Length: 304
Image (cartoon, rainbow, N blue to C red; front, side, top):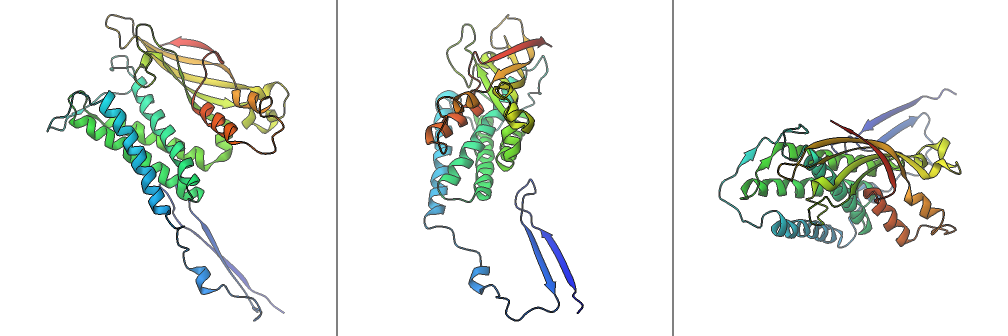
């Protein structure tokens, strides 16, 4: 008996980054009449859980309110004007206002916001893919709204460069959430030490910030089980110094070196033996994905 088999695949778009579903259809001749056919109700889109849209709206509103409240107290405390102003701030040049540290700050804020929001949207009942999409667009929308309000504020102006870095940071967060292997291999962190003469202000003290891209040994299969190397990481980074202090030497610094993977250290000591990750361990791991604890990295500096 001859049998004919045909298969077709269709890629459906899901997000700006091309994630979607692959649908496969196949036909065989002959087709047994006893093969069960899917029920019509099963083919229809399933309704969202009761109250999910309300919970999503609440998360979006909470995120916007949190950023807005901080902005009114720290960024826009001199009020607004009726005029929308723009400014070309440049990128990472020596003559820019902060040497580019503020640009990395925008990217990091959007990155962290996207990842935290994605986790929150999944926690209230969204499927992981939908949670990622909601986290990405919520982060981008809130950060874009901040930039627009800067355009109307007395203190700042709208910056295209800031808006682009917001999008880039949220995009990086999306890729990390989508690809667990990439997330296990790479972290984007900030190392903060209060700069001389400033108050403790991690968000605005650019001379105290160093942004690091960290490659973790635990993300490399050949090193993951090594008794020593599993605890270490390679780090490269960027930070500026002296841009906020009149008359001070302006420095743009590239950093490189090694750092300690505190998540792995804690996992093999404090949390060792647990059958599954506790809430405390998940919260600690998330914190350490974003924050490089002072004293846990040995970095060399190259001034540009």
